[in-house]
Amino acid sequence: MAHIDLRELGDDDLDATFEMMRDSAAVELAAFTASDPNDRARFDEWIARERSNSDVSLHVVTEAGGFAGTAATFMTDGDREVTFWIARHAWGRGVATAALHLLVSREPTRPLFARVASHNVPSIAVLEKCGFTEVSRNTDFAPGLGRHVEEIVFTLVPALDGN
Image (cartoon, rainbow, N blue to C red; front, side):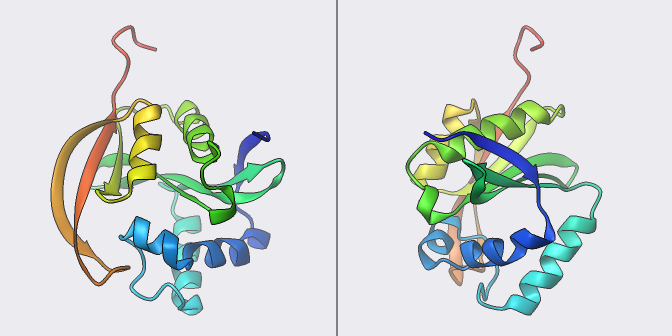
C-alpha cells in the first residue's frame, strides 16, 4: 500500500470531494448523505459551513500524495464523532483503515463516536479494526436513499491503561 496521510482540505480539493460524494455506489453504502448528491450549490453551502465551523476538523486523505478521500471529526449532541469517505479508486486496499488510525491518533477527545448504516459492511470492518465497538442501533431516515435505514453507533473509549 502507498503512503497514506491526512492534510487540511483546501479549495483545490472541492471538485474531487464533490465528485466522490456523488458516486452512486458510495451513496448507497453511506446512506446518510444529501438527498440530492448531484446538487453542487447545496454541496458548496454545506462544505462552506463545515469549513467555517471551529468544532469540525476536516481533512483530505491522501494516498501517495493524491486525493483518496476525506476524514473528519466534529461535534454532535455533545459527542465527538469521526467520519470518513474514501473515493472508489481507493477502496479495498486499507486506505480507510490507515486514514482512520491517523485521524484517531490526532484527536485527543475520548470517547469518540461513529455512525454507520448497518449494510455498510466495509465501513463497519474499518471501525472495528481501529478499535471501535458497537454501542447501539436505531432506525433513522437516510436522505441519500430516501428511506429508513438501520444505523449502528460505535464508540472508541480510552484504553484502561490511559493510553
